[in-house]
Amino acid sequence: MRSADPEVNPEPGRDLRLRPGPGLPRGLTVPAGELVERFSRAAGPGGQGVNTTDSRVELLFDPAASAAFTPAQRERVLAVLGDRLVGGRLSVAASERRSQLRNRAVARERLAALLREALAPPPPPRRPTRPTRGSQHRRLEAKKRRSQTKAGRGRVPPH
Image: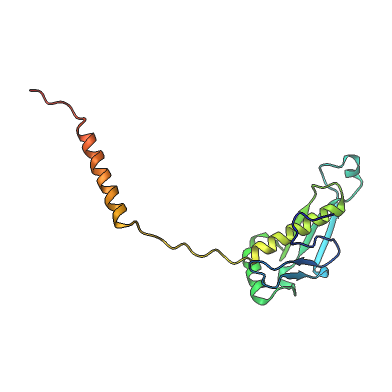
């Protein structure tokens, strides 16, 4: 099966490899031993097979104990993904495909996307700007013209 994201190695049972990118100058390899897969029966497509096959996949990963990260990367991942951690582990589930193998690949791709997003550098801070003197002048002149227009709409004084 070909992956939708060419930057991820989605093959189940192998190391999870991410190519270099923002926040990952040398890429990232998560050893297969650090990824725990759990299987269960899934709701959804599959017909009668849903009731007999464990096609839902839950992929668990403990970023705090992983040897794949540098200390700075580990700190960043834990800070960014802290709300998603359950018992210190990151959990990703996939059940939308009929086949367990495809769900395993989808779960690995989702985990890779989460890690890539967490390791990406934050955007540069916004630098506040001020209106130019000319734009301020034009705005005030427009307000004066509008004020004069409205002032001219009053009652006509009797002669």
